[in-house]
Image (cartoon, one colour):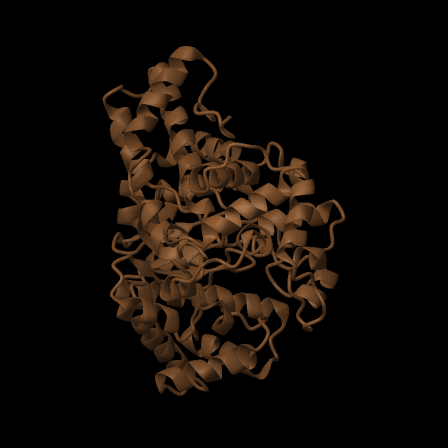
Length: 468
């Protein structure tokens, strides 16, 4: 028996469901454009088998292990590595059994949809995961992972991926992207420029990272002018490996357009580690405007991912480090925060700034009106905690009336979990087709327009917005 209902996420009313299904059939097999994510380019460079089911589905996926942690499961029992190298579970079968015995916790969540989609469509499984089926699942998936058709490059091709963007720190040497390019494989895996480590004075190792940036580029990053030139050089290096975007994960959406002398003085304080929290925030904000100006020079799309209160648990941060499921959304201002950047460059149609949010209350009040006015702005899709059927529907309902469809950028999966990529894109396609069907049924959209818009939301908008 299939794990998934073929009409999932479509409206319950028969006529509306038929219309949504027809729209979906036109776009379900379109190529996947994945313009922003966090998969590991090493997978595609080395093209080696994934180690085991636990390493594929559980240990690296914060969506999975944060749910289990919320019910008292220790991260060490899930194989999550400790920063001190202390003991954690390394037996993949034990980790999988623990995951399977708690699979009921994911009922009703988007993770359940993604996982079941992967189990059914990638591994051909037709029975529910549970404590009773755990060993069968583990053996079946393990056997599949030994076959050539389950190697990373083969899966990339089977998933119908046209282009896949990873995200690397500004100081990354991009060795795996170089290896992909030199291998002769025709899959398109590109990088994205993530300079947080050399922009945020509150990041651990900021001064050392800036010094490394200077070593890599040959510019004197002890000076403000040399620091900016090093960014330009590094962005050019990333562009050699296919980058079309930069990505900025800041605590807030604050921007500044400071006089150059004031920005240079702040930079010197940041180098010495003397910035107050307010000064560090001002420096991050000014650097967003500097990055926007550089985008006007080199064409990189600027993505702003603000509003996550990172590493909320001191204990988890101390034992396991960053990105371990304890980043929590917070209220985010955009209207006041973005004004300095928008006054500087916001009316430039040759600049693209894509805004994301973890604060849904800002959709109709701030984000849609901003994107509906400034030529440079586009709205990114529902992100992280809102990457769900309900979150996607709320996004369309609250932004379309003011920003329309063309001021959005389609869908991006923003994932570390490779097998979830086709699952996430399938969810987005179904939800968007359901939304369009409702517009047609209520007389707000012509039936001839809906298929064209479905194609745009699935494929065209992402290709154009990310210049792919």
